[in-house]
View (cartoon, rainbow, N blue to C red):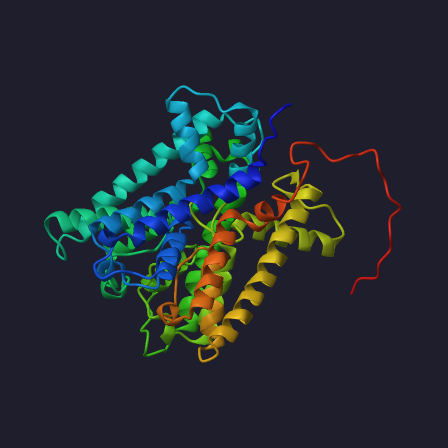
Length: 435
């Protein structure tokens, strides 16, 4: 009797759960913390690390020992690369073969076609990660040399290079980057690592391989166009909405930095609790859109947002959706619409439930915290440590679903995942009045 193969969607779902569970066990060990940590806080921190979110209910520098901090750093690295990427790289190093099911799993994780040379892609992804984190580490050594010395300087520089490139935002500074707002080198290095990590491995590899705009794939062109637009508009809008606010003293550098961090990295040079509501609205939009697919970032992905807008404009014009002289398929348009709408509804539902659990907190702050968790960002208005157990668990689920993706979670229930759709059955179309 042939062995029934697991759905790749289920493997992805269970894989992340397994890593989160392992991280929780390691963090709850006595030698991981200085004075102990509750199970819920350990679960929250492990989920935030693996899902590269950056929200934390405890102060990492004060609560965790060196071992605990190393565990968090490892979880961030695994979460950024993805357990599938790391696992398949190990198989390739050992000379093993992925097989059809393995290739299907890689395809589902990377969102690519079966034509992709997965071994070459995986090795390049790992190499890019190591190179970028090494460069970031070296620059951090220079940027932080006046603040730390010796082994502490080395460890903090390494931890923050890993956290920045993987769009995590977890820090060992104690108060985020509020005390480093005038450290231009540190801010620019962190922003560049975040932006490059958020482009996605497919885009970076395409740039290094093709080297010319003409040869870039449509996917790469879309990401390279939408990324600077979002950064520029985010910078300008955040600067304008905070202009004249004496509590924040926002300058253009901080506006650029926060716009870059909204691409799903949780470092902050500003106290978000002092921001105006308009600024938080801009931040929520940027966080919700997020970074590029197959990247270390989160959100619904900038390509999803681009396709959503392109499809909407094409519908209003009554023409096919054409981007860079290529027509976007109906399936891609449906997927973009589905992800955008479901993510919005889930964010509203989670925020509503959290407002019931913590009725004394500002709804604006709760909604910002929800978007930050769902988009795997990590920026916070400071209410995370004050949340009830129910709200913490709701955010854990939001971080998890945001990382694996709503489509992956729903497709777990698809029975015939390895078969195409049955085209032999056709139904009479129904007319339903819309609007």
